[in-house]
Length: 286
Image (cartoon, rainbow, N blue to C red; front, side, top):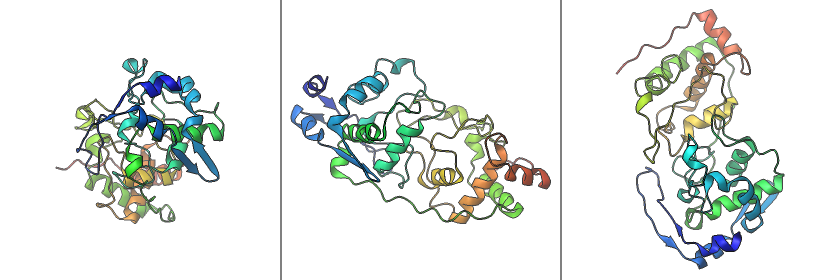
């Protein structure tokens, strides 16, 4: 299989930079591919090698992501959302600022966590070494890792105590930055813009429904939700709000969004506070 991969040319469909609008393409030679098979990855004490993951990629990943990592595996035509195109080097789940590459730990965590509401499962069958080797294999598909370093993970300040004042402040942020336009005033993914959303490849994409009990794709802890606000989900309409809201406001928004989620499986204190306050949905504004 490895020989077969090396004999086939690899096209880079586009490399999105900070605005996700600048694309370029270039054909890679067999020599380029061979050179990138030396790609490595590091997460904690784990050290991965792309060359050691060829068979696991063939067994577990190629059906969706394709032999060239371009998201065009034989199963892709039936999948929604579509598999990630690794050639672009653009990833939703990151601890790094928008437009930058994720860390190896970010990719490792995604493989281990899976992506809820997609065909990307939790890969419990893989050992820690298997997963870190797969991270290196994913990286070898995109030349971005040859010329760029991963971004520096954002700092997440300590989580403050949940209070009625913070929940109310979070609702104000929800209205002010117009989260409701996509997610709806009750978080049901039915806002006025929801039906028009597309990803950076112009494919329809759904806003997250806070009320249906599903897990957010990039993790369901309070820190995970905070991180999504401040890094954005690259390749999707979900932007980074790091320039629009302060860290304390981001925490307020986390607490308010928890009031929209079902109690089962989530912290219920925020919902109890919202009930005590008699909190009503935000009123849409232009």
